[in-house]
Amino acid sequence: MNKYEYKKAVEFLNGKIWHDSVLFEVRINRANSQDQVIIYLDLISNDDTWESQRVSMIFDGCYHIGTKFNGGVDCISEGEMISGANANYSDPQIENVKDTWKNLEVDLSDVFYFSMVLASTGSTIDVVCKSVSEVVESERAQHKVPPPILPDS
Image 1 (cartoon, rainbow, N blue to C red):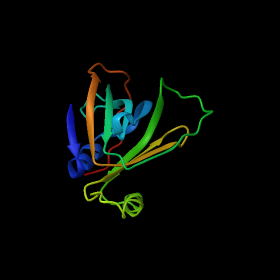
Image 2: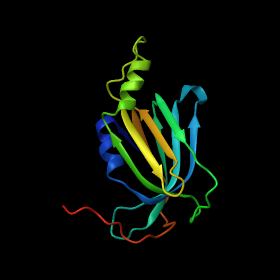
Image 3: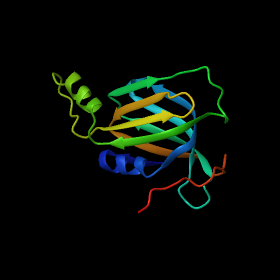
Protein backbone atom coordinates (compact mmCIF):
# COMPACT_ATOMS: atom_id res chain seq x y z
CA MET A 1 0.00 0.00 0.00
CA ASN A 2 1.33 3.42 -0.97
CA LYS A 3 0.23 6.39 1.15
CA TYR A 4 0.37 9.96 -0.14
CA GLU A 5 -0.10 13.07 1.93
CA TYR A 6 -1.11 16.61 0.95
CA LYS A 7 0.90 17.78 -2.08
CA LYS A 8 2.01 14.29 -3.09
CA ALA A 9 -1.63 13.17 -2.82
CA VAL A 10 -2.82 15.86 -5.24
CA GLU A 11 -0.07 14.99 -7.72
CA PHE A 12 -0.79 11.25 -7.34
CA LEU A 13 -4.57 11.61 -7.83
CA ASN A 14 -4.28 14.00 -10.79
CA GLY A 15 -1.87 11.57 -12.46
CA LYS A 16 -4.55 8.86 -12.66
CA ILE A 17 -6.83 8.22 -15.65
CA TRP A 18 -10.29 8.66 -14.18
CA HIS A 19 -12.39 9.02 -17.34
CA ASP A 20 -13.96 5.64 -18.24
CA SER A 21 -12.71 4.02 -15.05
CA VAL A 22 -15.55 2.24 -13.23
CA LEU A 23 -16.80 2.97 -9.71
CA PHE A 24 -18.27 0.03 -7.79
CA GLU A 25 -18.66 1.14 -4.20
CA VAL A 26 -18.13 4.05 -1.83
CA ARG A 27 -17.75 3.21 1.84
CA ILE A 28 -17.61 5.68 4.73
CA ASN A 29 -15.76 4.28 7.74
CA ARG A 30 -16.27 5.89 11.14
CA ALA A 31 -15.24 2.82 13.18
CA ASN A 32 -12.83 3.92 15.92
CA SER A 33 -12.99 7.49 14.58
CA GLN A 34 -11.29 6.48 11.32
CA ASP A 35 -12.87 9.37 9.35
CA GLN A 36 -12.21 7.43 6.19
CA VAL A 37 -13.71 7.18 2.70
CA ILE A 38 -12.93 4.05 0.69
CA ILE A 39 -13.67 4.03 -3.03
CA TYR A 40 -13.59 0.67 -4.83
CA LEU A 41 -13.06 0.88 -8.58
CA ASP A 42 -11.51 -0.44 -11.76
CA LEU A 43 -8.93 2.24 -12.47
CA ILE A 44 -7.51 2.49 -15.97
CA SER A 45 -3.76 2.10 -16.07
CA ASN A 46 -1.71 4.91 -17.54
CA ASP A 47 0.53 2.64 -19.56
CA ASP A 48 -0.05 1.77 -23.22
CA THR A 49 -2.39 -1.16 -22.51
CA TRP A 50 -5.36 0.99 -21.38
CA GLU A 51 -6.47 -1.92 -19.24
CA SER A 52 -7.74 -1.51 -15.73
CA GLN A 53 -6.99 -2.97 -12.36
CA ARG A 54 -9.22 -3.31 -9.32
CA VAL A 55 -8.07 -0.86 -6.65
CA SER A 56 -9.24 0.73 -3.43
CA MET A 57 -8.54 4.40 -2.81
CA ILE A 58 -8.56 5.08 0.93
CA PHE A 59 -8.93 8.72 1.94
CA ASP A 60 -7.86 9.28 5.57
CA GLY A 61 -8.30 12.19 7.93
CA CYS A 62 -11.53 13.31 6.28
CA TYR A 63 -13.05 16.58 7.47
CA HIS A 64 -15.73 16.76 4.79
CA ILE A 65 -17.48 14.04 2.80
CA GLY A 66 -20.06 15.25 0.30
CA THR A 67 -22.09 13.04 -1.99
CA LYS A 68 -24.94 13.56 -4.40
CA PHE A 69 -26.11 10.28 -5.88
CA ASN A 70 -28.73 10.19 -8.62
CA GLY A 71 -30.26 6.80 -9.36
CA GLY A 72 -32.62 5.44 -11.95
CA VAL A 73 -30.17 5.12 -14.84
CA ASP A 74 -28.91 1.74 -16.02
CA CYS A 75 -25.11 1.58 -16.07
CA ILE A 76 -23.48 0.38 -19.27
CA SER A 77 -20.88 -1.50 -17.25
CA GLU A 78 -20.72 -3.56 -14.08
CA GLY A 79 -20.41 -0.30 -12.11
CA GLU A 80 -20.87 3.40 -12.80
CA MET A 81 -18.44 4.91 -15.32
CA ILE A 82 -16.46 7.88 -14.04
CA SER A 83 -16.59 11.06 -16.07
CA GLY A 84 -13.64 12.67 -14.33
CA ALA A 85 -11.92 13.53 -11.05
CA ASN A 86 -9.72 16.29 -9.77
CA ALA A 87 -7.64 17.04 -6.68
CA ASN A 88 -6.31 20.42 -5.57
CA TYR A 89 -4.90 22.37 -2.64
CA SER A 90 -7.35 25.24 -2.70
CA ASP A 91 -11.07 25.11 -3.14
CA PRO A 92 -14.01 26.92 -1.55
CA GLN A 93 -14.90 23.65 0.20
CA ILE A 94 -11.53 23.69 2.00
CA GLU A 95 -12.28 27.21 3.22
CA ASN A 96 -15.73 26.04 4.40
CA VAL A 97 -14.10 23.23 6.38
CA LYS A 98 -11.56 25.60 7.92
CA ASP A 99 -14.36 27.99 8.85
CA THR A 100 -16.35 25.15 10.45
CA TRP A 101 -13.38 24.09 12.60
CA LYS A 102 -11.96 27.57 13.33
CA ASN A 103 -12.90 27.58 17.04
CA LEU A 104 -11.25 24.24 17.73
CA GLU A 105 -7.56 23.46 17.88
CA VAL A 106 -7.42 21.50 14.62
CA ASP A 107 -4.49 21.83 12.21
CA LEU A 108 -5.99 22.03 8.73
CA SER A 109 -2.93 23.42 6.96
CA ASP A 110 -2.33 20.14 5.16
CA VAL A 111 -5.76 19.19 3.76
CA PHE A 112 -6.62 18.84 0.09
CA TYR A 113 -9.82 18.57 -1.92
CA PHE A 114 -10.81 15.64 -4.16
CA SER A 115 -13.90 15.56 -6.36
CA MET A 116 -15.32 12.95 -8.72
CA VAL A 117 -18.18 13.13 -11.23
CA LEU A 118 -19.94 10.01 -12.50
CA ALA A 119 -20.81 9.75 -16.18
CA SER A 120 -24.38 8.55 -16.65
CA THR A 121 -26.00 10.02 -13.55
CA GLY A 122 -24.00 13.20 -12.92
CA SER A 123 -23.54 12.02 -9.34
CA THR A 124 -20.70 13.58 -7.37
CA ILE A 125 -18.36 12.69 -4.54
CA ASP A 126 -16.18 15.27 -2.84
CA VAL A 127 -13.78 14.89 0.06
CA VAL A 128 -11.56 17.21 2.09
CA CYS A 129 -8.89 15.09 3.78
CA LYS A 130 -5.24 14.73 4.75
CA SER A 131 -4.03 11.67 2.82
CA VAL A 132 -4.88 8.98 0.31
CA SER A 133 -3.64 5.40 -0.07
CA GLU A 134 -3.99 3.06 -2.99
CA VAL A 135 -4.43 -0.68 -2.47
CA VAL A 136 -4.23 -2.83 -5.60
CA GLU A 137 -6.86 -5.55 -5.22
CA SER A 138 -6.13 -7.30 -8.54
CA GLU A 139 -3.46 -6.92 -11.21
CA ARG A 140 -5.74 -8.53 -13.77
CA ALA A 141 -7.45 -6.32 -16.32
CA GLN A 142 -11.13 -5.92 -15.56
CA HIS A 143 -12.18 -4.00 -18.66
CA LYS A 144 -10.54 -2.40 -21.67
CA VAL A 145 -11.37 0.95 -23.18
CA PRO A 146 -10.12 2.86 -26.19
CA PRO A 147 -7.07 5.04 -25.41
CA PRO A 148 -8.14 8.37 -23.91
CA ILE A 149 -7.72 11.59 -25.83
CA LEU A 150 -4.87 13.31 -24.02
CA PRO A 151 -4.18 17.04 -24.31
CA ASP A 152 -1.32 18.06 -26.57
CA SER A 153 1.89 18.64 -24.64
